[in-house]
Length: 420
Length: 166
View: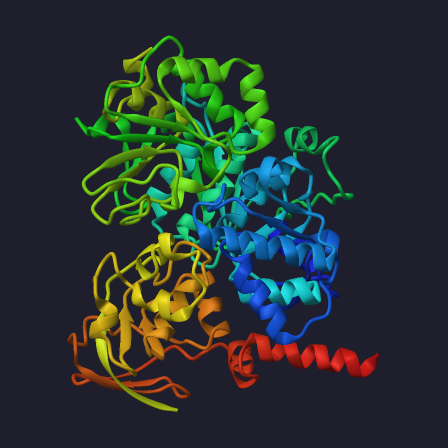
């Protein structure tokens, strides 16, 4: 029997030729990640076990992106601790200050993740790297400690669910709309413990930025990882970035899947996930008059060039509605610089937006855009749980950048066609 | 091991932002995390709950972020066990790694809030007032981890073995 990409990558990281769903394996890992929220707990455990070194200082990465620039004294202390730990153990990939970007945009951009890798990260959105044909998944801080020390970790080989996508994309529709559509279809536990494999001609037509957004939200359907086959676009993305040699895996024709979904993207319009679950998905047009107080364009889901470009296109020559705060957060310093060069900042500033340094900040209600009681936001982020962006009685609607930008102009949830 | 405790009922998809809101994540002190456990749904939960109480949930308990602060916050309140129909996978690993026991069983509609239930963690037998339910067995690999005293102790042992070889 054949294997899926996920099974092949996992098998290649063990001493076995073949693995099957449900099997527990002990696998080698290529990269271990933690951030300013999760690394302090990993470091505590590291010290408790009395480890003397990390398995490979080049393969441990810390990105201080959540509560930075440091939001308070405790956060500053956490970052200081990580910085000192990195120095003590020779970890050179500790990103902060002007080098810091949102981890899941930063790592692929810096070429730290390549096709065929197995990556674990103490952040649930670590599944993002499936977009480059890597197996990557989120874990807790203690598992990360184990990985940091041993260079290995145990996995249960997941069953795979295939999403075969065909048809033509409508204007403004991106990977975010597809993944919201899928989560709406299968639910927030529809892919529980499973690998979500995306394929088909409509996927080939998608940009890398859109693929990152799709893989990123696999966790919102309960998925263990999201994964894409490597194609010309992936190779063009990796070219000149990849820090290590890569390996390309493809699913066998006779690989076995738990489910196969055929999706015609022609019928997928702009989507919004209403409070308080990412599966509560509606078409923008169904919503009626939903007034908003804040817009956030950013995050590990949608803070990339494609998103900023769509926002700039829509906001050009327009104004953000009075009483609406529109916060734009380029995900990495490279994206920030590119957006600056392409004149997007002038568009955003002219429109009355706030431009934030790269940070996870408001996405998880950390800082840089917290909602008051009763306030409502449209965000290109990934979660709209109760109280996610601030007060328990505030609300988050999730969308792609085009809807977010149009909504900022109208002061209510809006379709880009209403302002263009 | 037999546990007896009062039931606190929560529904489906109890996410990690409910279990411990992100604004408290800069803290690593279990006591502080426990004080804010379940705050968005039940403010003051930490004051109502007693040592040995048991949380009962529905589908996909613990979905959302990878924050280990979630099982730490629950344990900090003296809650030794969560029973739910299904668990989100990262929470599942984290709970076992942090010594919080989990059992998969669909009892949410069988139990009343505040009812005392008796649970045999090893066999998975749950005695509710209305019915005795058998939980899904804990996977053998997880049981091995528990027998080792959790992942950190397992790792410690591995490191000692490595040192002996050197």
